[in-house]
Image (cartoon, rainbow, N blue to C red; front, side, top):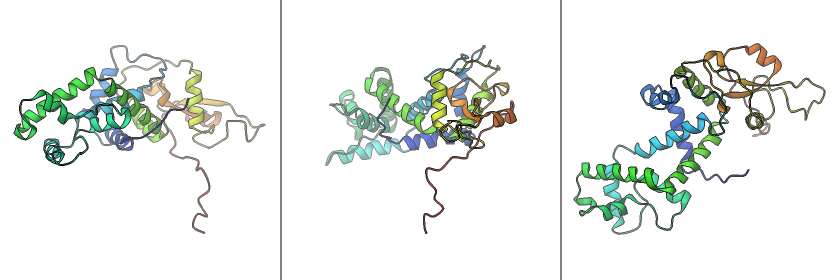
Length: 275
């Protein structure tokens, strides 16, 4: 299935996700990881809306609230400029919704305040503006189809990028395993997950690069192993984001350890680029 990708600030969101995992923001991450695991742990099954999708959506929803520190001044400045000419909305989520959904009546916090308040922006205190922003975001999240559509699109685009980065997947699944109180049982990997991982890893073992597709060396042993990046013995989970393609030898050598490779096959040889 082909899906249009337009990437509104998606690389920034991916960097935010990576920074959260690698930058030691333990308290922030606990807000995501802890609710996933109840007394019995997460559901032991592969879901097409994976745990990585959940994480991407969570990062996006956090970003809706975590505007720049001087957001009140940005709102005031945008209001002052708008008196003389049109300008972009001051809130990030409004810009994202307008970009993806192109609503007939553009989302705009300033227009919403004008309809809700008896006072203009420049007559409101900083606290009043911040209170209005809170109410506006709450209303968006609870009752806007455009908001939901925008978050869904951003989630899919983030997943598409991050699913290809095995080092990120290792860090993400390490975080999951740290909060997972139980060892999950090995279950059959569904065909859709196998196909996704096979094509993501270009039909090659991620460790030694051996071709497992059978298109190059038809006579070679090409026994395919779908390996857990963070092993189930180390509290890894059954999720498509925790799988990688291995040959038999590399997987057996890896045994029950948790590991991946940051090596990727280049699209073409770059050694003679500047000759």
